[in-house]
Image (cartoon, rainbow, N blue to C red; front, side):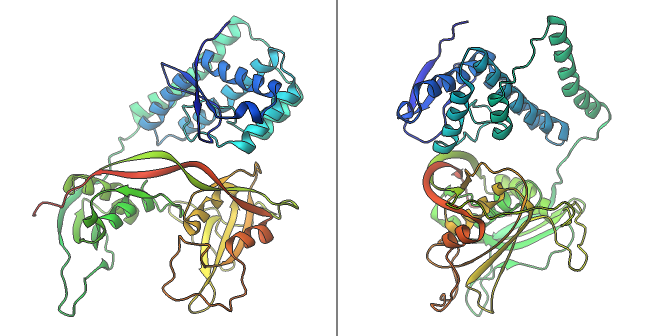
Length: 442
């Protein structure tokens, strides 16, 4: 069946992809015809046209709505991951059935992975989604699924609908509604200036169900929308905030609020603080993705030097957290430390994590880090590097020692992990302040 779709060119480094839900167009990066051989490009285009015929963007958008409504159900998220995996598998099989050579197709996918950045949006169908290693193995062995009869297709569709609808119906009939805690009372005023001069700032000793702190609006936004955005402490990561008037960085406000019941500190400083900022400061904010300078994490010459994670070598993190026994490590990371009384050397510890977790290095480097190694699996990392001009994201309150023999962050990553950081362009997520006002008098 012939498929017609509008083709547009992009100057960025996003991979080829189908954009839109009802009105679709194929977005191709400039110069891709010079970077792929004709058979490779033909196979990649056939893959994208398969997404168009299957209306994959529409179904992905529908599932995103389901995820937003039933975010608390793990099966919904599992189904979302399976949908991405199956849509890529179906298009791979379609490309091979049209007569494309498996080697040309596999090399085309790998070249796209090397040269371009995957779209951060699930509802934009590209060519590099799902598990690349499994897909390449299936392509090279030319494993095409058996054709299903109409009856089998109907049974498969019914099973899929049941898997999606059963947890939703059960949760609706028997589950308790998820209601975010609310503030019983909240007083906001400019921070008091003590007689000794300066500004009274910081947080008072926490007490159950109470939030007492003095901070700039910018710091409040960063706390509510980044550090505790989803009601739990999030791992370090760089999420720049732009927009807003100058006073949000200079004027400090004292918040004294009492919650209904005794919600956790993470809930109060996350979703509940977001609601307070939107109500009392009339804050309007949104997320957007822009093309920005990034660092691409790739494999260095000589290959990776990674320590594979051993099952049971660390304690899985739970909610509420289980205190580790003496000598026992918690899985995850990073655990951040330093050397000396005025440390100029950072020490990062990761246990049982994928290479994607190294995106936290963006906090030190001052720009996002994107994993382009293509290496799957879990590893343990120990990384030490000097905080100097190569780590502009961390400002020292004391001068770095010229005698410190430690390596820079770039050298450490190459020598200790067998990886490297290359400057590139890629998608970066931003929080954008649309509008904000000084709070009204209490």
